[in-house]
Image 1: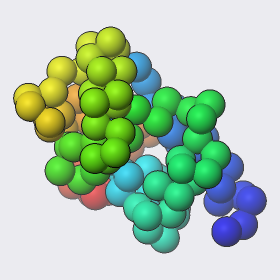
Image 2: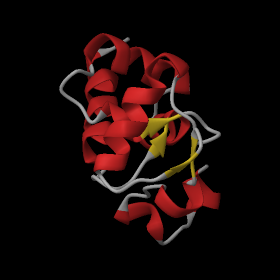
Image 3: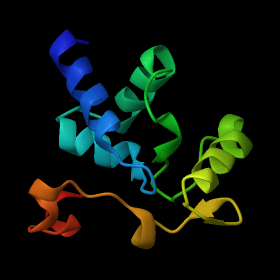
Image 4: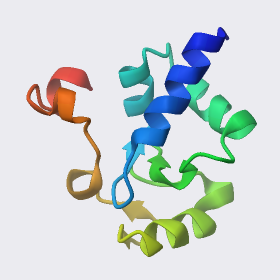
Length: 107
């Protein structure tokens, strides 16, 4: 992966504010990454200093191996899950520059 794309992915993840979440697909779309899996790879390899807990799967659930810890950290930020799932309609982040177009135009 090229360094510029890597840094764009990191920058978008860093922009997700406390109290909000985004999906791997959201981050890929905003950063121009070719796939959500690439976002996951960046987080796995170079995401310790990022708000990784704010990035969820498309169905609003955390990665299974991180679920308890991730949901706990989100709860501390005010993001409440219904069982294992976060309501994306309530907590999903959309950057201000894209808010006028609505999520349908981007995702």
